[in-house]
Image 1 (cartoon, rainbow, N blue to C red):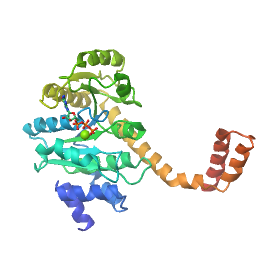
Image 2 (image 1 turned 90 degrees about the vertical axis):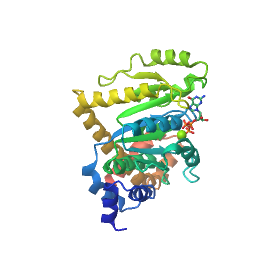
Image 3 (image 1 turned 135 degrees about the horizontal axis):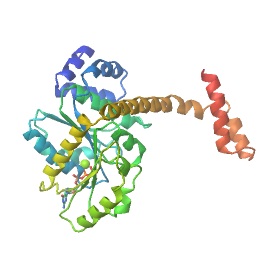
Image 4 (image 1 turned 90 degrees about the horizontal axis):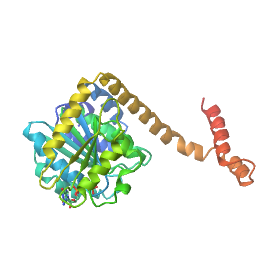
Length: 317
Ligand SMILES: Nc1nc2c(ncn2[C@@H]2O[C@H](COP(=O)(O)OP(=O)(O)OP(=O)(O)O)[C@@H](O)[C@H]2O)c(=O)[nH]1
Ligand SMILES: [Mg+2]
């Protein structure tokens, strides 16, 4: 397939084009940069939902139910399940196929598990790029499922329009809630598995926990669901629609949009910088001299880092 054919295939929403381009993203194929820039003018239409939460809280089961409801509204859906834990085995793939199996044959639903072979910020960059591809292909809703641990996952969520944090009763609440920055970026909190004991307790703890977490005029919502049976899914959909309208009508909507673009540019630069310079810094000419000085307790590692960076900057300009 030529590059232009691939672009046409993406823009027409053909699943083969989507699959091929996302594989190129995963493989860091140099041609993908050009493809991304040529499809960019078609992006910005899809509503992007990040669904995050500790392993096993029921994210995929919930997404399965969300897809069913969105399909009844005739919306086209894309799902990217980000799997940071098993880049080589693709461990999540089988589970996701099972949980979302109702929709695998629907031509208006595109589901993809993805991993990234390059480690430094690679997964969030790859996810961002894949979201652009799906957006340009004409989907109405894009759902990104991620496990929500670590900074790179938080970075992924920064490019979404609605962050849904999925929790469940029984799991030690302190463990699941206070993960790196997740509380702060949550727009909607779901207490899933509300059929299990402890869900009311969890919900009231949440209400308490997010009482002061208002951002850009949005007040985070809390919803109880049972994603196996579908209880609460309509409320969740209402809440997602409410968020979508809020973003559309908010006086801050341009500002929020600008912030997202800023995040995207910054993240891209940061991951490029890291990729470009990590090895060069590690193998820097002066590195050993600084290590010697730190070994001899003449300077501390922080000062060594500052001096090395200064020296490094001089050499690259
Ligand atoms: N009791 C109960 N179990 C549920 C509910 N929703 C999901 N489960 C079960 O919880 C387990 C995990 O569900 P998944 O949807 O795979 O959870 P996940 O958060 O996607 O898991 P990872 O992708 O591995 O992080 C499965 O066995 C589901 O059947 C619910 O509302 N109530
Ligand atoms: Mg899952």
